[in-house]
Length: 381
Image 1 (cartoon, rainbow, N blue to C red):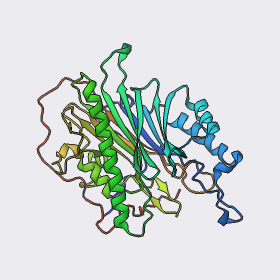
Image 2 (cartoon, one colour):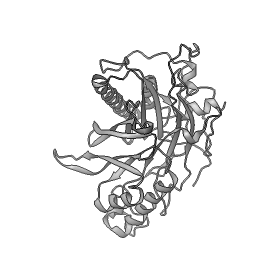
Image 3 (cartoon, rainbow, N blue to C red):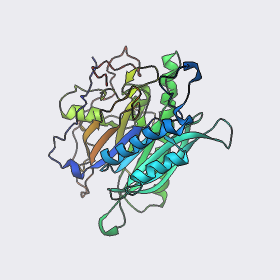
Image 4 (cartoon, one colour):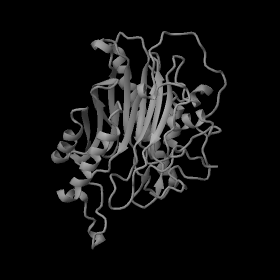
């Protein structure tokens, strides 16, 4: 049985002010170098939008203005398919440069020392709850990267000692092989590299930090597969929580297992799929000190399925996909942005225990459906 979360915003049922929550947005903005121009007289030419400024500039300005208006309150925005063209970058800096700090990582090319035209970009709101510490990249496959970002909690009056957030801005490979097993294993391998890179970044910080507080870890982006894929399952096996599944359980719209938020992407084959995800976990300083992932699947407390990430009140409040046009000649992108809001309170440690009931939240929606299977909903926008 397939479960789809509706497209309208999922509101918190906890009575917490969502306005004060940490807001994380992921959005594949469709780089002009990857967009084939529609309605070309000779389709064999496969003309790219990036070839002429009059082709790419209107959409770039639309995307920049859309982000500036729609996500002005997001603390961090993770963008995939960021184009490193100077004019393109200038458009975004003019639209959002006053409000957001920008850091980007470029994909390597097929020849050593050369680079592709696109990569990953992170925007951190200057007046938000977090401040940017650093950004790096990890190679996840041939000419493919993930961006590893460290942010720190912004404390009032320039206070020191803010908690850290480690984020993996991810873009897994397209499942282009005819054999679904090959697609699954390749994406799973890429997810494993991202998990290790995120853990290594946190452990490097651990070596020099005197803080004893836990940190928040986020893996998000375009997985090119849905929530019951091998890649998503591996992430959840490492105690990450799928934000959409958690909010579905909160609202009693799920009986357990992975949940898709609905269509977030219209691919180049015309398939409408759910591939854009946000996963969260709270990591204690003692976790994975050796930098290696455990091969033993951990037991999952039932509270995790409801979005409770620890005993201190850290929890997933809401998830929303924005219902923009994703097909046709007038699109901003062929992806829809997804935003998660998280309550991350500063509380004293308690001895309160979470429920000792355990469930497996990685149960597939449909064992006969491939991980990147088409989401059959009524959404045709």
